[in-house]
Image (cartoon, rainbow, N blue to C red):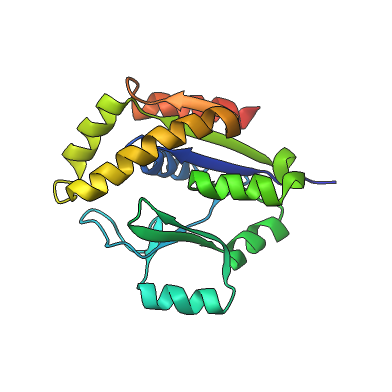
Length: 192
C-alpha cells in the first residue's frame, strides 16, 4: 500500500527555516506538498500574506478554536499564536502526498506523546544555530524587535537545542554554512 510521509522542519529563530522552505518550494520536488502556517503576529515588511503564513487577528483565531479547526496550535516565544488547520493536512494525506511543515518543538513533543503510532511516518529535521550567530541574525533582521521578545527567543533557543537532541531525527547546524548547503543536506535526507 502507498505510504505518505510527514517531514517536519524545526529550528531556532534565525536558523533559516523560512529560507529552506522557499528553496524547497522552488525546487518543485515530486510528491512533496507544503502546508502553510497561520499566525496572529504582525506581518514583517518583507512578508506576503499566504506566501508561507496566513496572518489573522487573534479574534479570528479564537473563533477558529471554538470551531475545532486546528490540528495543533501553540503560543510561541510568548508573542503570538501559530497553528495548522486540520483541513490542510487532511487534504494532502487523502491524496497520498508527502507533506512538509515547519513547526514548533512543543507541537512535535505533543504529537509524539499523543500519537506514538505516527513516529514511523514522521521525519524531523532541526536547524540549529549557535547563540552568537543567533544574536547576529536576529539583530540584523529585526531592528524593531523589543528586548523582551529577543530574550524570549533566546530562552527558546536554549530549550529547543536540548529538546532537539532527544526528539529530532536530524540536526543541521546552520551557523557556518550557506542556505544552499542546508538545502543540499535536506535533499539527502529526503532521498533516504
